Length: 97
Image 1: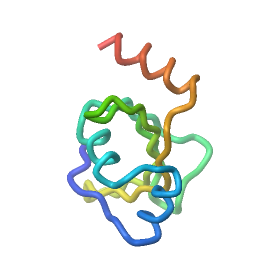
Image 2 (image 1 turned 30 degrees about the horizontal axis):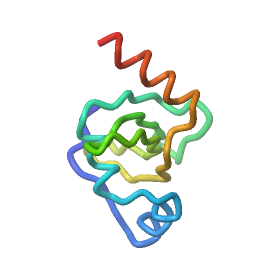
Image 3 (image 1 turned 45 degrees about the horizontal axis):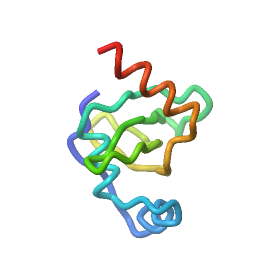
């Protein structure tokens, strides 16, 4: 999956800000080397939702849920700090590379 661009609007930016996350951190994670997982529990019409687990340049571990569009664009649904189980999964998966 190649994300070339994120679609941002004020509502999404406000929502992730409530989790103390900013758009730059989301893009650092998603344009870095995240672990991408297809979300089996939700989809938005024809476009599937995924989540990315990754680290920011400052070392923060983030969970980012997004909708991926076929034109290589993505729209963030939410972003927050990873919980402990997500961190463990991320560490295991990143060590397998």
